[in-house]
Image (cartoon, rainbow, N blue to C red; front, side):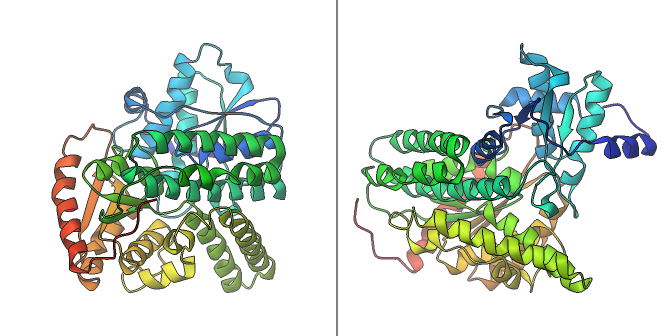
Length: 425
């Protein structure tokens, strides 16, 4: 990417359009399977929305070609998806299209993705609008009301629980591929139900999901449990983390990844804290009201999974608990993901996990903070096996080599306090 002046950056940043127009086709980059819920919520609002396919090595190639080398992996992948769309989609029309790229504040370059991508498009001579919604404002827009926000939220929570069913069953399935097939079918049902009938459609889609997973024939549940935390994009995106969950399963482990929902609760918490600190009652009340509505929506979705998941998977700690867990290592005044991720790692350790893996992009500032305190957290929690993995745009060949001794350690750790073996389904 060509070097640009400070004034260029200011001009482009102010030019980002945060509106949503129904006459444009919106392309959502694939971050994780939660994108299905987002697409369903957009379509329910009458917006022509498509989620791009899972990124592959070609997206990495495009992303590297149009960046300067110092950008983090999530930027390279999302930029690569955008460039691939422009160059390879035969029916792509720049003027009638928009690319969805959320943003956030705090000590992370995520807040500059949309700005840099707009600059890249300008230097390519492509006029593609970038829609950038802010985390602090719950990723909403003047064109989208409470119905959209509540529907998107409940869909994201539904995918969180759906993934837990996937991770709970797939390592033990006797018929290879059955769990994945049910999972993919359920994702489509969620997206279609939300698109056609909003919240009612989502709840209807969830009614039979648990029974489908319960029909999967499984063997004894005796694998070590590994909790995965870290930078949200990398931990959620299979390309970015080298398909980490499957690697753990292939090596004899069972994995859980921190839920997406915790980030949204965290943004509410910061809004309430800021409102209280600045003596802005309205800001505080908005954060409090969002919390209340989101808890109601989460409880509604969770009830559909209650008979098929154990308490550990059903009951997530509050962000307040996560912040308390993290406080001896990273105070909450450090705003952003490290507070949540260290807090969640400690929660996993306390709830019986046999190992912790943190994943971060190379040169990630919040990731460096997580890694810097990981040894202290490990020592304070019975020396639980702990592995820090850093990912960049290069195709790493040593992830499996590093995982093998880690899984061995997790198995030995599990043997220290074995749990009663659960019966087969």
